[in-house]
Length: 107
Image 1: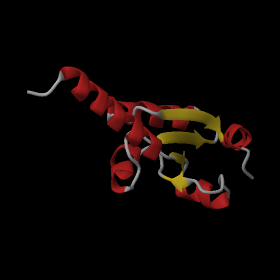
Image 2: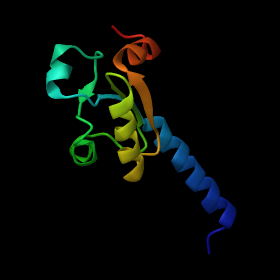
Image 3: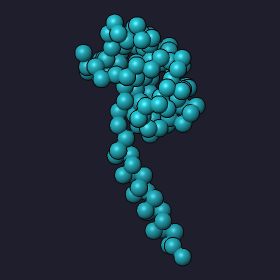
Image 4: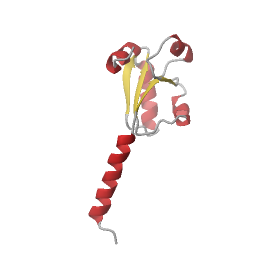
């Protein structure tokens, strides 16, 4: 029979190792036309109206740090609630594109 302390310690070790693999993913939830007109470098474009389905088609893991932005923060707020509802535990709304650029310090 396995020792409970060994099982807990092993489980915690695995969780720490997996969290080290989590990555930052920046998602622009504006329309494709808005995205094409300008976006944060390295951002993915998944419109807020499709994020619940389309994020599952990407390689974004539910424990990745998902950074959302739009033009003003309203649509990224809606997208955040959608992602939380499907189990994305580490998603964050960075607000509008200018705020996101400042927080990420990207052009």
